[in-house]
Length: 180
Image (cartoon, rainbow, N blue to C red):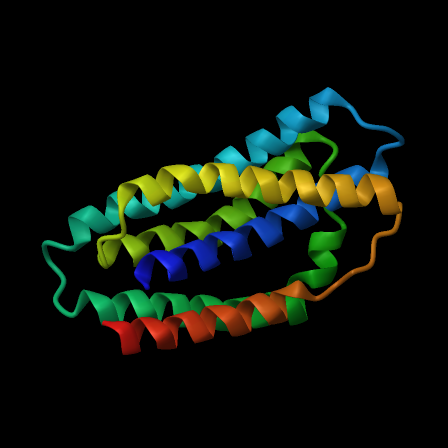
């Protein structure tokens, strides 16, 4: 069950990355191989944040008791943070141009902060390391899917996916408490 919850959170992060890819595809006239390298860079930055969070949690496990409560609390707070993002930061995120490298890195770091807390949370409850490694592929796939959608549709509707993701994070936090 823990592996499934981790996979769900990685899919949610890939949905966030798909928005970055969608904006990039929307701005482009046609497919460019350099865009794939930019999307991989974005996915890799998010993956690094997950990994750093996971490594930090290895040190925290030796000093924390009730690690499961800490893990679920972190994810619960992340869900509430995404509600705030949906209300206050949504317009600001739309103004970031992901086609230039600095905008791409800023967007990736914003998503990376969320992924850092996912890495810490699931590291606290000893998720399998191989799942951490495979998350890079899922993140990259989400970014490419968003890019293809942006290229094909040439329509950028400002979905408020943060609310949906926030609700799912809160449900994941509750399921972690029930499971553990």
